[in-house]
Length: 272
Image (cartoon, rainbow, N blue to C red; front, side):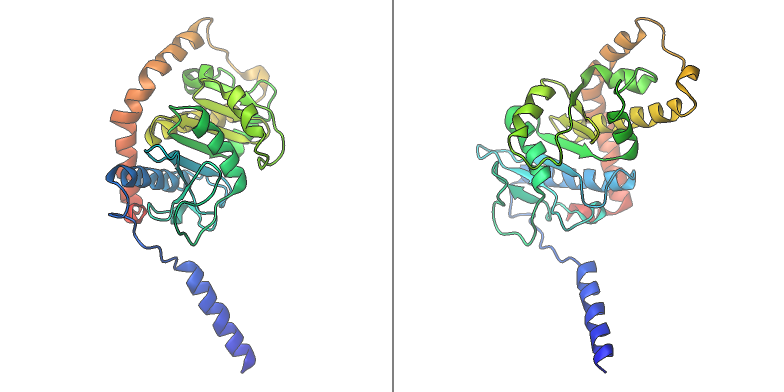
């Protein structure tokens, strides 16, 4: 009888974990904040859809409008396909939750994201991933190479930051900021990829192009570096200029609205 009771308790615990009850914040926050929450939650679901998540160990964040310098970060206990607009945790620049929450956030996520939110006025959204292709290119001495159109579109907008260990030391923020400069993307050496944007959509489009470029580079080099066709002289520079001109328009007016509709089709619960 004791064994049966124990099994019952285990099943009840598993059911409780599978059914995370999160009260809706819609109407409790400003309309502007709610829209950012919905966009960020959609980005989490899309990252999971594209297979870019790393269990619970990477982060997407967005700044909340206002003088307080608060931003939204994923709760550490939820996988990306569970994240909703209401479950996102609002934290201050010291990493402390603003208001009551049953969740806690990740210290390493706070270090990287707070650095960029504090230093860059245009860094309203920050996306950081640990995909195998992104990590592979981040571990290569040449970084991202101009092997494909996608790489050439973003390559001139990429910064690099050397690996210092798991990013829990707040002193590393100054070095991340210095290495990032005014670039829109970063390869964290031996670690992963990162992108910023004035909107969630802009950051998402940047990370999408960066991830696709990394994946293509790994596939191209898998056949041997001697088999790679290098683009004609001058074409990478031309393509880089085209990328700078077209990204904002593509993110705001074309790609992100379509991706948001895709997120709703996949599972509209993210917007709760």
